[in-house]
Length: 489
Image: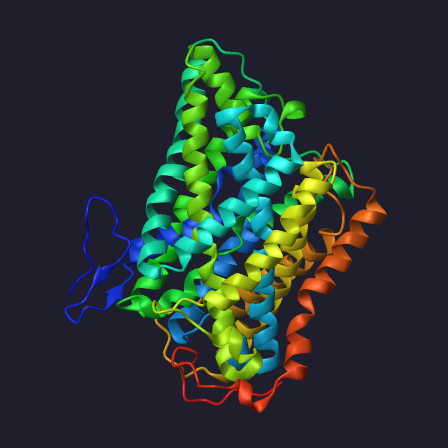
């Protein structure tokens, strides 16, 4: 049965036997939903035309290598980053890689939902956006609601992610572009330089000025995350690479033009990192005399963020479940509900998110917490990417005969570009971005990051040391591809 080509991409299709499959267009939207968000646009908007360079450079050095490598690995091995690294370097590093992917996700939820709270505040009272108590409460309520949706199974969260992305990300992104043009043509004052006077490259003013550029790598993180669902596609070797290509197009659309639209509306020095998108809509709609429309856009953005969170909750935690079934997590964490969803692991990550949400309520600056959690998520994720790129290059050498539906061209070049970019981004991530108006003292910022990375990232080695033979209940059927035994690290 061929994948349906409806006017709107279906979240999934169903075989004659009743099994549900994810179509390649829906997989592309799942990937784009995991990566593309209007949340990060205000951070790049102060650069104006130079923001194009700041998006394209990380895309070339990071997003494209991740997309190419993930397409090859997913079309050759089932199970996501755990299996990819396990096949190359053994169980220990495989556990390390999937743990960092999962844990960065846990650190990312509060930062993403802080933007959700900011958008929701515009619906009731914009002043609430600066309230840590309001932000913390919203994080808790929305996260646990999203978890409830995710427990309903792949068909449910795929539908929510698909339609939520279209309504809550594509529509606001397109609206920013359209209303920026209307605003400019109608005589509105643009804060974006004219093309004739444009600065196409950012001015270098020291190390801190380029850290924000490097932090943009996180904007493209997640290209590989939905590879864990590749076994739920009808023909993954052919369809997953197609999904990658479409997702890249969607991601660049969401990022570049809407960022320029924000630059048109708001002066760079006045852009708020969590409210910048809605600041822009306030300007555009205020000029047109329809200020109420900002509330509509805020509600759509809320829907888009909800879809993104629902999409991220089951992905990395699914990979962690695979690790657990290999005997590296206690049996209690290996349980699933009737829909096959890893509810115990979701509960654990929910408890961690709950603790982090309290930070928004007790620390004085919402933006400072936003930056610290985002930076912590970047560092954890980059550790995983370093290992993933090394694994891809090794598997090309040691497992050349494993069938791959897609082969990365010039793998050594692509792999090393991605690896070195990840290392550079990791090292520079310990310098706080200069664009943060509520900056934390540099020494304290580094200390918080180091402590956070150690506390959140060390557990795979602890659990690996503490594992017991009775923890391995049964092998997961989706955690390998080839018959080649893993090389134990």
